[in-house]
Image (cartoon, rainbow, N blue to C red; front, side, top):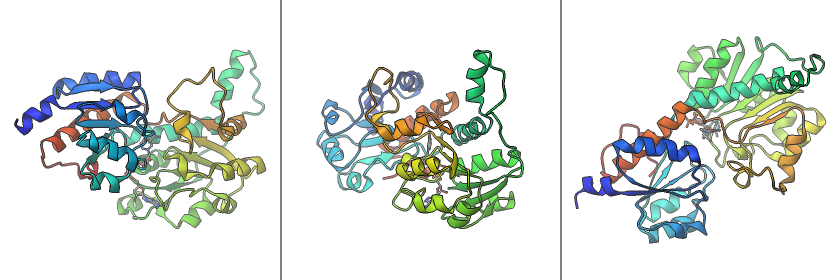
Length: 341
Ligand code: NAI
């Protein structure tokens, strides 16, 4: 069988499938012709047994792809783990390498989608449009409690100036904010655009708004903790559209109770895999920390929806299938950041 034939008949099994995944991947498979199989369930040690005659396993942010799962995938002859997201903190890359499984991801499907959602969170928390919406529906036209602040002239600290951090900086510049940034790599183009690269400590001390756009790894885990919160300005606004593990939840709750944190917008949450992407409206939530967070009037929680635009889902489907094709056919890839192993 030629490599071309393998790629044409390859089977791709999707885990954590939502209705919209099926719509976008089926639509864009027309140009690729893979056999698609969709599982609603998350991939983990128990569900790995569902995989039969599958070349590619396509996973999302909360699927469990640790050593034990990878071992099971290797036994089933899976050749590729295709992440349909940018972050890959949930995949044991070392183990995948050892078991000879290739891993790819979608490095930048629409950085603007995530950056724009971070802005939506800032504007909502600041101008309290979520409260105003409910208020006027009750014919309450009072403004008490809705007081906001001008963004113009405020200092915004960005942690992580990759694709999303850059897109976010461009929008924030339009609001007339002073922009500070921290990254392990200084971006000279951004410096030319008026962004000042500073130490992490300076970000914490000088920003009125802090937006997280770095990946979750050993260095960044709990980057927002008791110590860093103590350094921040009183009534700081913290926005996290990156990964839940960047914020130590207990410290954030303490900071909110003390009034040190004035506003918290989170699209991601440390324990989100047990909650997000499902309708639990009839369930008793056992996670007390998320319940406490949602009880604060100055906390906005969205359920990992920052990526969720038409443009982003189209790109995700096209890039994921493109990655799979390149790996199956052993082709040279232009987008090097897409291939992790
Ligand atoms: P990217 O790879 O383009 O940029 C990440 C940046 O973080 C790089 O500039 C890198 O140098 C920097 N960085 C790495 N380690 C750091 C450290 N220790 N301290 C400070 N900066 C550090 O990634 P991109 O596309 O901008 O995405 C960022 C994150 O956003 C992803 O890792 C992912 O977790 C999250 N994300 C969230 C989505 C959502 O729907 N909420 C959707 C897409 C991504």
